[in-house]
Amino acid sequence: MSNEALPQAAAGEIERLDLARLGAMLRERRGSLSLRQAAADANVSFSTFSRVESGSQPDLTSFMLLCAWLGVPPSEFFAPIAPREQSGVDAAISHLSSDPRLAPEAAGKIADVLRTMYDALAQNVAGQPVVACHLRAASVLRPGVPERLNKLLGTMNSELERLVDSGRL
Image (cartoon, rainbow, N blue to C red; front, top):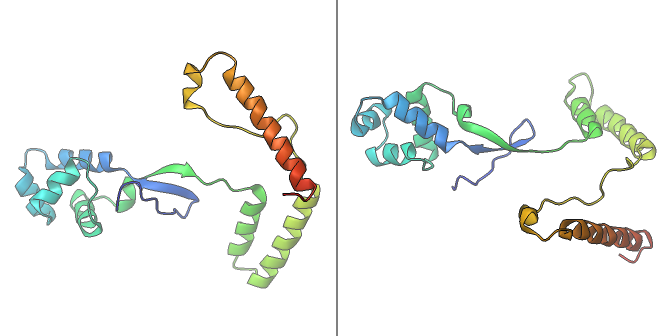
């Protein structure tokens, strides 16, 4: 498993294993112990301890053993990297679904009413950009290019909306 693997977090965030922090804590805890002695104390192989201390990702068993040796929970090394956006309506529906006083059917009915009301009453916020992008190279583009690109993307978005509204797309 590469350190790019992204398990889904219960709190609605995607998390990754903070290998640099794990390695730093291992070095700190090891102190003056040799790598071999620290590995033996942690009940992992010398090579595993050395690799993890240098920033490599351990297998699950080794990770759990190293966390136990450090005396910290495994969750200590997971860092959020991408919050998952949740609308207000979705948050309310989530709360309703987890309410033990509501039967699942009742929560579903309330959720349907909420979503219907929201869809009927919600309005687009004027002044918000319809199209947004991040250009890493914007600082090296010729003057005016980012603005022209933004205008072009806005025009493309408008045309796509027109085609969708007319049923042609």
